Amino acid sequence: MRRLRWRWRYTVEIDQLGSEALDVRLVGIHALESLAVESKRYRREVVEVLSAFVRGRTVLDPRQPWGTWPAGATSSRSASLELPASADQATTDTPLDLVRNLDTDVQAALAALGRLSAKVDMSLASSIYTLLAGQVRAEAWLEEAVLTDAWVGRANLTGVHLEAANLADVRLVWADLHRARLAGANLTRACLVWANLTGARLDTANLTSARLDGANLTDARLIWANLTGARLIWANLTGARLDGANLTDARLDVAVLTGARLDGANLTDARLDGANLTDARLDGANLTRASLHLADFTRASLDFADLTDAQLFLTDLTGARLDGVNLTRACLDFVDLTSARLDGANLTGARLDVAVLTGARLDGANLTGVEGLRQEQVDVARGDEQTVLPEGITRPAFWTESK
Image 1 (cartoon, one colour):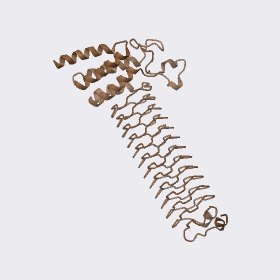
Image 2: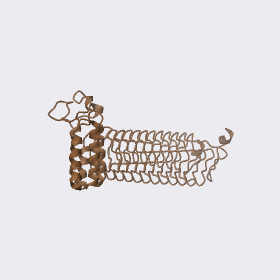
Image 3: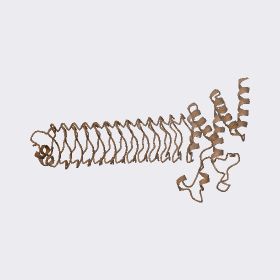
Image 4: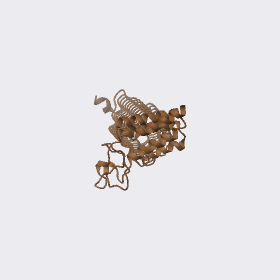
């Protein structure tokens, strides 16, 4: 009796998918998903049917002229297409009418397939993933979908909703995810090399050991995201928000973080050699043992940041704000601190060989035990009677006279 009931349900729900009424199609999609959850026997068939439903509503008939939809695509809103040019580069050959949002029923079917992927083996799940490869998935909704270990190269997932989705080990090389919604998503060990994540939302996302080399994260939000051990070499994070993010052991060599916000971020043992952090904000950030060789912190704000044992060889800190910063035992050899502010900074045991201190402010700073500091360096800096100097260095007279 159960098998007969399942068969009857399957037949009825298939008919609902072909209805011209949107609400009937949506009922059919959810009913088929429910059937697949209940019956292993129909799981494969349901996945194949929903996959065919999505394909039928998202791909143009190649035999028809541009803008002609295949039979069954009766909605006034078009689905996504395989285009020879991106939406931003649409021409007369790729009219803007073709670049529209996914229909509600297509979004529902994709979301159902995403949820069912947790219950099928990879051979079945691959039919879900291939739906995404090379397609424009504008504003698709796939919250809480499970797409672990998927290979989706060069996919166009503009504006896709993948909040809290499980994307562990996913491969999205060169994928277009600009304005994607990935808040709370699990992207552990994900490969997003050269991906476009401009304006993407990744707040609280887990990107542990993820690879984002060369990725474009301009204006992206990664507030409180976990990027432990992540690789962002050559990544572009201009204007990105990484407040409170965990970047322990992360690799950001030669990354661009111009104007980025990293207030309170944890960058312990991170590597930012050659990175550009011009006008970035790292107030209260933890950069203990961080490698910052040749990095550019021009006009950056690092007030009360912790740079204990950090390595800043040849780093540019021109005009930077470092009030209250902890630079205990930090290596500042050949650093440029021209016009930088270090009021109340702790430089105990730091190295300042050939560091440029022209116009630097050291009011109330502690330079006890600083190595490599010469009198001529101090003579061009600014301090006060509260500045603690190492042995052998004389306080310039103008420090107190100017007060």
